[in-house]
Amino acid sequence: MTAKKRVAVLISGRGSNMQALVEAARAPDYPAEIALVISNRPDAPGLAWAKTQGIPTLPLNHKHYESREHFEGQLQSVLEISKIDLVALAGFMRLMTAPFVDRWRDRMINIHPSLLPAFKGLRTHEQALEAGVRISGCTVHFVRPEMDDGPIIGQAAVPVLSSDTAETLSARVLAAEHRLYPRALALVARGLVQVDGTVVSTQDAVNAEINQEQVLGSPSL
Ligand code: GRF
Image (cartoon, rainbow, N blue to C red; front, side, top):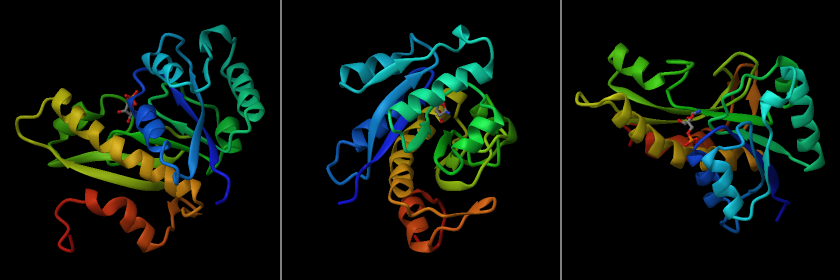
């Protein structure tokens, strides 16, 4: 078997997506290992959890750096020293500069709690409810300098119910995130995802593998 890809997960808080990645990566045939968890908030609950699992963790408090560039310089050093192949953002609440993002082009992925390109930014579930959409979901994509932008690797859809609040919708989407993110990371780690300009041109079989059980209302399912 080829060597597992070394993944750093960047978080800022709860870290439930990071936890889903860690749990998936326990499977012997999973193509990636979570080699490092970094949080820009030292008190992030996710960081404490990762520590209890024996995963190398690093608090990297952005407030201790005079600029975004200095913070990212330190981050880059740590990623290099740790021989990281892929970066997975999981609720990481810092915007990154274009040079840093470009350095990790097609090697850094993010999960966002909407069906992009709809509802970028914060308060995604409120945005979805205000727009009256009947289906929402989540997206895993390669990171580009623009916020919540980049080639889409996979999406999972969930229904929006008329009784939904931002909290209930968020919980339903979060459960889908926990299923989607490990599958998306596995495909990237296996080298099965090709980027072609602004889109992913992955084979249909791979697309079906990641997206099929999630798609609602598709006549073929
Ligand atoms: C998730 O909804 C993720 O999509 C978004 O931030 C939230 C992080 O949650 N980017 P958690 O820290 O993974 O629990």
